[in-house]
Amino acid sequence: MTKTVSNTAVSADGLELVPHGTEPFPVEVYELDLPTYTVPWHWHGDWEYVLCTGNRTLCRTPEGDIVLDPGYGLFIGPRMIHEVTAASTRSSIRSIVFDPRFVASESSIIWEKYVSPVAGMGTVKLHPDNPWQWDVMHELCNAWHYMDQEAPGYEIKSRQALENALYLLSGHTELTRTSTSEKARRSTERLELMLRYIERHFGERLTVAKIAASASVSESECLRCFKSVLRTTPNRYLREYRLLKAEELLVSTTDTAADIAAVCGFSDAAYFTKLFREAKGATPIEYRRDASRA
Image (cartoon, rainbow, N blue to C red; front, side, top):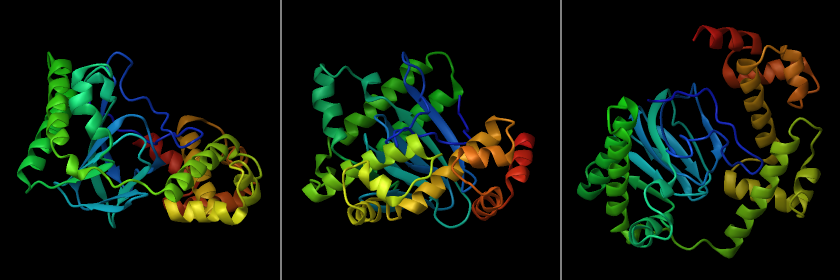
């Protein structure tokens, strides 16, 4: 059955915490409205397919921005940090997230020949007017619908569809992303450490110096990493992360807005309300009220 989620919780290093499926069946499908819902910067060990179903969708990655028109898809490999939002106005997407080990064991010939080659692709934009890419999209959409409808045998059918999609992708290794430069790799590794620190300490008084120290780099290097990979600043990322956590707590708890502001690192409740209104178009109290009616 399709899930519609109100937020994406991420771990210390940006690793998504929302479990996708269950341990014996690690696959999940989602249907999301954008920008009401924005998938913030995150990554996961699972693989993901995103299909734009309404207006343009923007997928941001360290490799660049990818704009999806309705009917276009994006395959996202493991540990590819990304953010998904509407390109301009409201949009919508369907996605399927799965652990590749659901398709095959890492010790199997299937993994070696058909799964492993896909892992190096990074992100692959899929065009519906390209015959083989349309075939990939068709199989992934089949998997999505089998999961959504949960008809008898959907577990087997969805696995077979994912296997077919990976088989088709594995035949196009020319799409494998170019090797990341040593500098870019080092920046990403340092950024992971700093995101981990922010997630663990977002409720505390943080400075760029403290964030930089968590990765044993200078403040200038910290600023460069955030700019080069996420195209933002540490302070802006911290503010947006705090607002994201506040949004979470407004929906999942009955704590007062002032208490939530304090827990999320905002020392001034009035300033928190101002920032929240600018980001969400509603005050924290209005947002909670509207969420409870949805």
